[in-house]
Length: 159
Image (cartoon, rainbow, N blue to C red):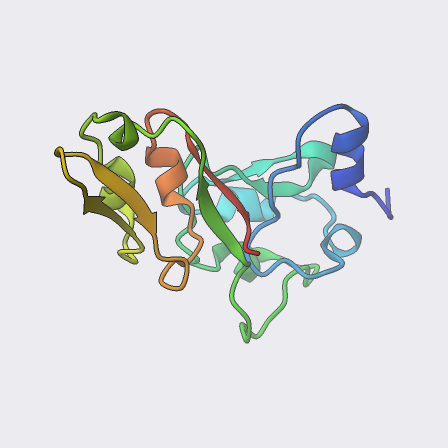
């Protein structure tokens, strides 16, 4: 099934954008990947799932990526860009409306799981705290997405 464009396939089926490919996926990942699932089985955090078209995808609602490179190590088809001269991807979290902290509810679940300390809550007058994301410090691991109890964080390509 060469030449499959999962993004287009999802669009034609009326779905939102497809889940992202694993970190360091080559530009021609869908041409190289034979959908053997070795990378999914090797994924230490369980964030890799079988996506549309059978290709491995990252599902940040399950967990964050530890960038352990286990998926890269088991790939026999060289579907990943190695050596790692570039960042694994340019994904960064985006906050949608509905954050509990913005509603005055104390919640810092995303901050607690952010190992890069890229998520902070800036105190405001009246006791509320506003979520702030330092995109320069963010690794794009997505752990904050899985931790959010109201699903208002999502990963998208950095502008």
